Image 1 (cartoon, rainbow, N blue to C red):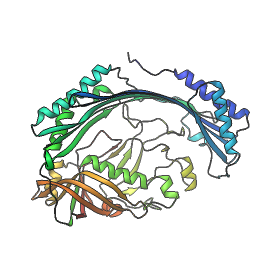
Image 2 (spheres, one colour; image 1 turned 90 degrees about the horizontal axis):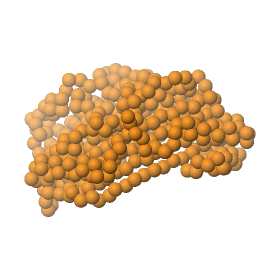
Image 3 (cartoon, rainbow, N blue to C red; image 1 turned 45 degrees about the horizontal axis):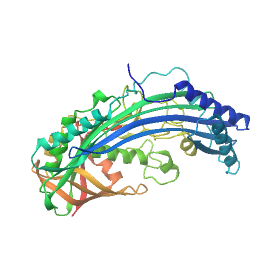
Image 4 (cartoon, rainbow, N blue to C red; image 1 turned 90 degrees about the vertical axis):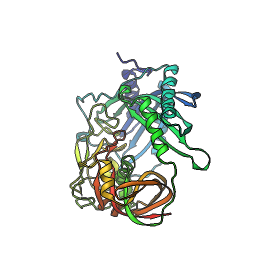
Length: 446
């Protein structure tokens, strides 16, 4: 039997949401939305075997959006008393009266909402660890890192976090539903070498089910291997070379695509993907799918943060952009339909081939394998991309030596089109699952 540390019943949260909506209607709101949520959790951090932090968190809140025709406003409170709920609604209404009319403002249409019975996505798996048990797991990860290689000289710590959350979302068009979820994570960061030759790296595991996490020993050993592999890193000469992005970093590149293909940048004319629906953005072997209803996946959801029903879809098919990531407001601004992405994307999966990371390195022949990125030099209007980087130099299809203190630069539009291959070394920890990306050419600077 799973035991939750959450305080309120689902029925209590539903009643609070209903109270807010009823009061909004009684005070003249033409439409309203209410979200009531509660979360709790704990985290511990140890460093060199000693406990550094033990933290507990518990939060709750009510967020109300009210509409007066095309005028709208929001207000929130952490007080669940009936008086506070009503005062919050009235505060939102008083603000809305002074806002400008917005023709795109308003709730989703009723036919867009996730009404009716919805499947259980198996997202709630509380982990009732005592502080002592959490500390012991973090220590095991750190101890495994020190035991893995004598060159691991120091530690930045190992941490364990376990969180639970529940919410109810309701609006005046008849929608009321919610979800309970959990998220657990274990990480370790260590330092190899000493003096001026020190290098750090880390590893982590995260899942909604505690028994699906990697073992503390596996996490510590991987952190140690990655840190030791970077010892002896040096700069390289500037030039133009193929660049291979390790899978966790390729997930970040996919995140840049999601941002550029999202509503706000598009209707603000601040994206290089404006008016690109139906256009080839990637090579023809590139297919990106959104699968919102996968059981026990961290980004699964039956509906988005506006109550719109989520659906399976192909965002990119054979390289061609099939759809954006839109909420109700941005869809109206663009004269398109919402894609149920208020709050973000849901379980993106990129098709991969038969290439392992090792075979991609061989295919690259001579170039740069990137395992760490620094800075945020991305211009979404133009697509220009420039980041600090570290990783490994590759010669004759084999890793020659580690590299640090370099920059890589290009343009996201060109980078996407110039993807040569995608690895099958999928990083399953992210909501954007992909293997490594081999990009044909980028500028590398010392």
